[in-house]
Image (cartoon, rainbow, N blue to C red; front, top):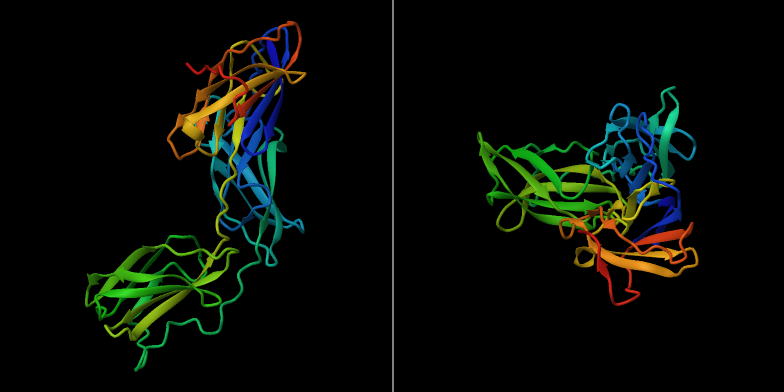
Length: 362
């Protein structure tokens, strides 16, 4: 029999576990509440905004099905706290992906996110922390924040009105803009432009309208380019004529977070946990943050001296182009000398060490 002693990640795309000879299989003791907590996204030191979407998992079901969180800045000031419910389970692993709203420090800088489960005495039981960064709070808008002036006439400020989102709402792309006009637009639709604080055009186009009383209403989902470092953007919706002259309009300043960072390509081994004694075959469960080539992952086992004992590959579960899960039952060749021996399993996109791989997920 073999006992799991270590869990490691190699680079960004390999998951490794080390096994050691043991006497017999021992089932893990029953737990009161969840076990270790793992935060898988965003990566360490990512620049983030509020709300912040966090992904991760916990081994075992929390006592009340919920985990707690808080965020403190580099001065030790708490910027947000709360709790959230865990979601889908794979075996004894429960996943979470809450959206956490917190106050951004005025000067930006480092923040520390901690996700934890209280113990029975009200202290902190299992926990995981992640260092992140935020940009400074958005600057105030320039003095001129109204709609573009009409060409050849006085603006009629109530002809076009943006009703949502409210000023300085934190938004992403696409953003849904709603509003109304007091009279039908001259061209049967409205124009829009989204500008940065330096008046760079981030998006532009037309918005359809629907009759509403003597005027019209509108609601559109607008895609635009997020500022790389996050900043205010100005959304302008206007009525213009066939000559392109602006008749009237309205504008609203909104906040954005930094453009999202592509998730790291990772393979995460969920079970067996460190210290578990296992037999042959061994079932290894886990997940990936990406879809592997041809939907397969390789595995390899070496002894303590780095000598190859066995290798193979198995298919993952899921949909092409999306993150995947895996739970293969792996038969592997034991060390020829027998007796206690350190073994290391590697799971990832590995080059073949020899030409006779075995398909071990069946």
